[in-house]
Image 1: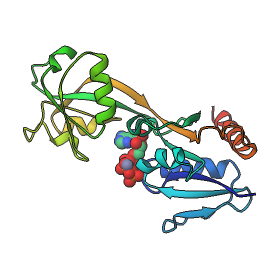
Image 2: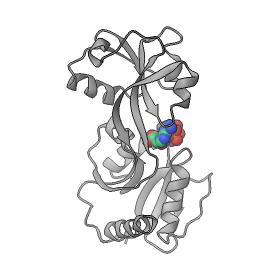
Image 3: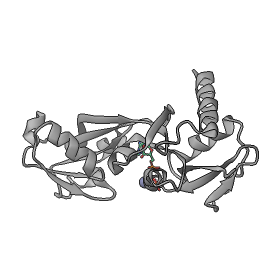
Image 4: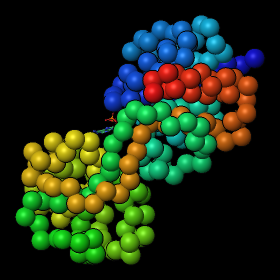
Length: 210
Ligand code: ATP
Ligand code: ZN
């Protein structure tokens, strides 16, 4: 039988915890930084190491059967996949933040303002839900420097400790979503024998940590 494929982040904040989780499930594989695919020697599974942004689409399109990725990335890419298990790591909150000294005090004052972000889809949904029309400026990185450069009135970004906001003269204003790493699967494959086996192993690793 063809092995399943699970996509995990190649390097970055989720890589280490994803590898650790799979190893704790009893899976034996080499964690070569240079290779894209690592076969698991004691389970019908191959591990694909990818950029996190690509993981939801790879799973939706069936290039991978499973994936480990932040909920924020899944929401932003708007893919149709199954949520199989929350994993308890990679926790963060996506917030709107304002420059210290901003005159904005309530949400509706964002009307007509510009907000810089790398998460335009999630922000747009939030603004619509709150009936606010603002100018979303999509930039791919260093969002937090945008107000200081006069490029936006506010930002929408991932915040974990708030240190980055502070050092850029920003303050948290509104929490939009919270996120953690989740196991996702291709729609319709949830009951596959080996998918179920893996979910069960993951659940017992998570239970042992409680
Ligand atoms: P890649 O090279 O794979 O595209 P990246 O730079 O987009 O990586 P990372 O910074 O490694 O992504 O973050 C991966 C995920 O970790 C985020 O999408 C988010 O779900 C989670 N995360 C948790 N805390 C933080 C944080 N403080 N900053 C950014 N991401 C965080
Ligand atoms: Zn990324």
